[in-house]
Image (cartoon, rainbow, N blue to C red; front, side, top):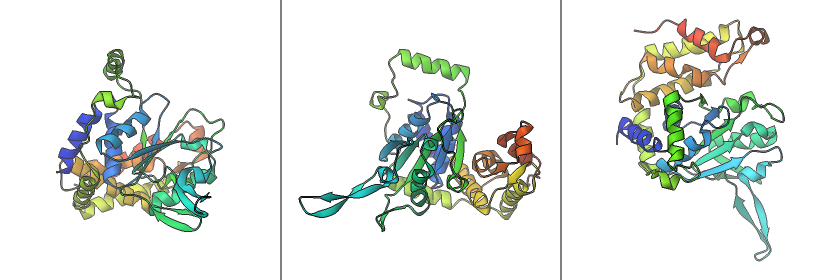
Length: 315
């Protein structure tokens, strides 16, 4: 199965339940194909959780959700060893992190100690419990959501952990026609809590995903694209509006996402428009604006958009 064909089938199936979030859906699929994790940000009610649940179902992957709260402990996420009085031995009770798709809901509502429990898993694909490393299943993808409008009682993600997310997807209000369609579907009986009634079918499994990722890895990237990626990333370090620019890891992420989106669109090579389109979701969580820029009302996306537009596009 070609990547473009698989992507189209995924869109068709997820479209049975999700309306008006086509860009977010494509970016999430790109991250999965590039073997990365996704940070989802948007106000409540924009179908963040629904998008992830539908993707897991359509990809036929095990799905678990953790509601992050201020009292959540690291052991609640990774698991712990529990004494069994019948055998007089400790037995491992695995936490919800041992799954294919983990939804860390409202990740900024839990303290850094618990947030950091995800760091090893996201980077090393393993969880250490009482000094013993346990491999996580294949594939392993973390989707984390956060609410951008509520800051009371929240713990902003450390920069190191934000950098572990391949992309940051911003969900916006759907177009008028799409939102009216949502109302119509609700009237006709659709409920997000009952995906079985929506008739979503699995179109990909874990082994097929492995083959699709291999196809993505084989996408061609020319030297001029590498140069273009470097110029965009290095421009964030030279900007007078940015206090901390993007690291080389950001360039790696941009190349990986560029290859995935090229394959999704049926090409065996990356073009500059792939890089240009993905620059914002890849970079927006990897830079830090200067306080002076924030006082002037500049937003991260505004600064990045200007930087990207100012770079010469390779021919």
